[in-house]
Image (cartoon, rainbow, N blue to C red):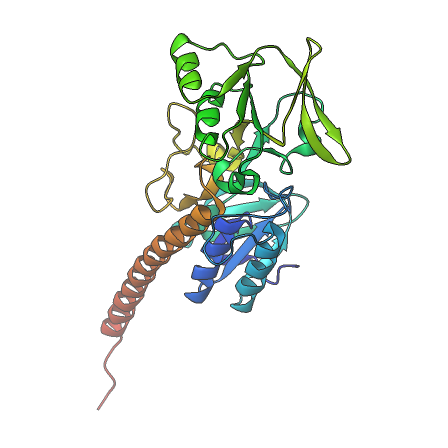
Length: 327
């Protein structure tokens, strides 16, 4: 959609569940809102999403389509594009922001919500990228029930793989941890053995796929293990360049920090969803967007009141300075 304006109360960057829910609440609050989105949602490879009350099993694309329709129904604008930079700018004596679009104009906003998500950095194992989100999975809470009681595997490509394998034991009695490059401690081996999770030593060479379905894992040493689905923990990299470019504070792990409403350390900038919380599910991100919208609207009301007071005082001063009319 092409923008009709360039000045908004709030610009939301990212049209996933978090960004759209923030835009929805703000538009219902009669704020002028623009949502800018590049059209590359993290969960696009998944056919369904789970764990979202009343939306369990819904296709991610269907949720976003419904959300976009709801948001525009309340007057928010959707802009297809990429944001290159957010800059602080003085606007009318108050702090505002210039949101610069790639190959396009800059939008001005009193407040900005960043909901740009994260990217999954996957290991370079043949078959991983092709099966990602299908039968090569990450989140047990999102997909565990759908592959329950199947023979499951976990690739040891991340230090959290052991915890993942122990967690998946709730969904299946047949869980294998492919050690791959992971070094296991004695305590970890004991925990895995106690939970009857089998450890397969050797390096994962490739995922075996037949008839567009994962069949198992082939090892570099020549053997293979049949599996119905395989899980891995990707290295999750937040798409937070807009936030770090503004100087938002980060924690010891390099993630941008916020308060419970999504407020960052930079006044006027909020961040919601996976860009600041790697564990946020779709439903969690939607809630984060709503919380941010409430806080933003309250802050804008305070600004509106302050502006009205200043205008009121100026009008009184002007009236008092005018000469009285002759009788």
